[in-house]
Image 1 (cartoon, rainbow, N blue to C red):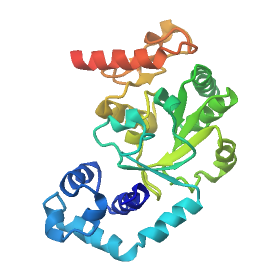
Image 2 (cartoon, helix red, strand yellow):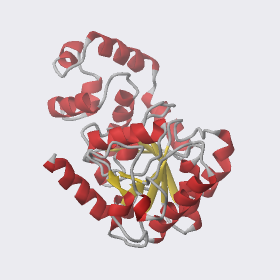
Image 3 (tube, rainbow, N blue to C red):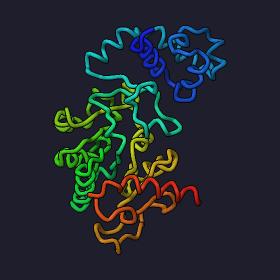
Image 4 (tube, rainbow, N blue to C red):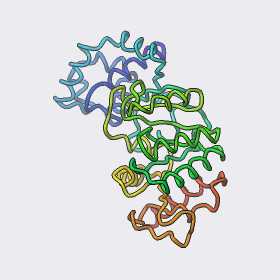
Length: 295
């Protein structure tokens, strides 16, 4: 059986609501291939953790979706399917507990993307917030660090644009699906990213929560908004280093962190003196791990 043929069944199971990383691992252990699992009887699937609702959802997808036609539709849109079994699956993402079994990708995922930092924050950005986001993203990009964000309004957009302006790499993790740009005014930015960036998601259709996916791609930065707070929470769960820009940038004496619980969240100023320091993301992640192990 070809690798491409097997991937179609990864996509099929990924379409089934309620089937995630845990059941994927159980199926691979029990059936050796997902093609065998796709045609397995219900009793065999129950033994790997399928409940009645999972079986109902699975049988619905299996009866309604033509995997060959679905695969052809993905390729027609230049969407690549990357699974745990692929060498270009992001190493850092694979290390989190609930790493998505399937990624839908437009663009390329390369070895250079292993050194990556997620830059996230408020959608209602101020002039000061814009300055900070631009300097952080541009400095990282100039150092060869891939900037990850979500292509949302506000800090996300600024981070992607600053990384591109600096001649760097950027990855957009989309909650709207890789072939559906939201908000629509960001289509031009998405087109600009062609050749210099990657758009990816763990689902082919829109999904409201993808903080875990973003945090698995690198450390991050947040403001006191739902995005930043949720992102910090997911960083803690996924053991990704989280850095926050608190106080008045760039003065270290103003670094009183009023917005974040300091446990498990490092101040940006404590980890680097210059954004031109390539060791910044590595050192931050190391210090974060040591702080967590000591608590």
